[in-house]
Image 1: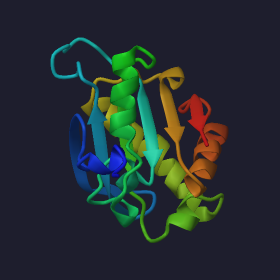
Image 2: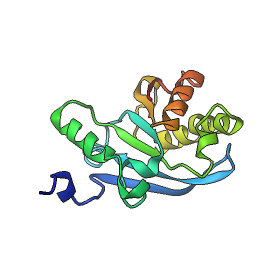
Image 3: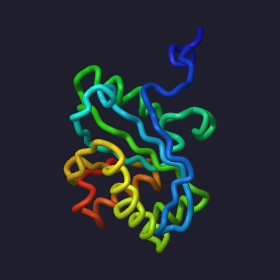
Image 4: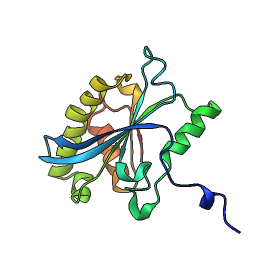
Length: 167
């Protein structure tokens, strides 16, 4: 018999916006950014939201871009937790990786530039373009494997920007 998850058609749950070929000045390269917006975002125009930045953004919610076609289901999980009242509404920002992922997600020169890109360019862009709660206590980073390492390094090196990390 088929498992329940095998019967679910892979798709993005909720509303997302893409910023294709976003130019990272500190790295002199481009990458796609995906932004997942919480259920009340369109309706409650005065409301501002905490932000979760996630590395390997191509894997987090879109099966079409995810490694081997299986995404991490961040969109389904966040939606379920919000509906259950276990998570306040948040904005999720996924930063797609590049072929230089290992260097960018480490304490190398490229890693330092990736952190500069996150803190000095991407976060200010997201805070300007979306209704965010911009203080560090409302700003988190999260990643898997090397994405976990760079999340730790971001909180360590930019404690006034990123207040939380999941590694």
